[in-house]
Amino acid sequence: MIDVGCLIRTFSPEETQKIGKKLGSLLLPGSFILLEGELGGGKTCFTRGIVSGVDPDCQVFVSSPTFAIMNEYRCSIPVYHFDFYRLHGAGEITELGFEDYFCGEGICIAEWGERTGELTPPDHITVTFRYVTENCRDISFEAEGGRSSAALKKLSSFLQKGGSSPNDSIGDPLFSDS
Image 1 (cartoon, rainbow, N blue to C red):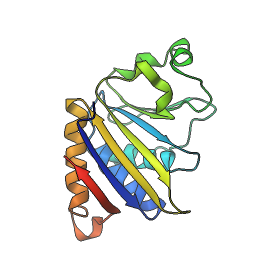
Image 2: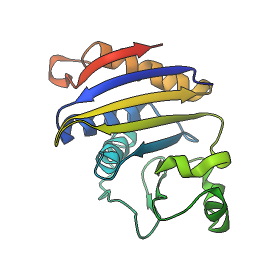
Image 3: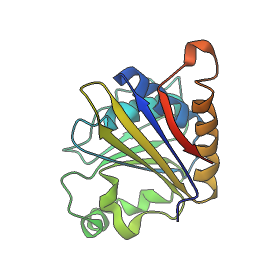
C-alpha cells in the first residue's frame, strides 16, 4: 500500500542530481530506495545526488555498479549501491547474499529495484524515472512505511516550495499527495 507519492519533472541531469541530494539529506540508517526505469533514465545521476546528500563531505566517485553489482560508499552512513540489471530476480540476489544489507544500518539504493521482489523491505521508497526528452525526466516517488513516508513528505514539501531558497529551485512539481 502506498502511503505517500509525488511526481516531478526535471529538465537537466543537474536538477535530477539536486533532487537526489535533497532526498539523501532526509534519509536515515536503514533506508531502502528502489530505482526503476529504462537504461539512461537518470538512476545513477540521482544516486550521485543521494550520496552527496547523505554526507556532503564524502568525496566518492559514484558510478553504476553494473558489472560489480554492488558499490559501497564509505560515508558517515554507509551507502550500498546495487545494480540488479544483470540479475533475474530475488533468487539470485539471495544466492549472492545481498539481502543481508537490506535491513542493516546503511542506506541501500537498488537500481532495477523491481528485481528485489519479495526481498524488498516493507519500509521503502520507490523512485521511477520516465524518459521525456534527452534532458527531461518525469520522476515519480512512492513511499511505504513510516520512515520512508516521513522522508518523502519532507521532500514533497521542499519540492512544492521550489527548494529551500531561490538558488535551490529545482524541477517542476506536477502533483503531490501527502
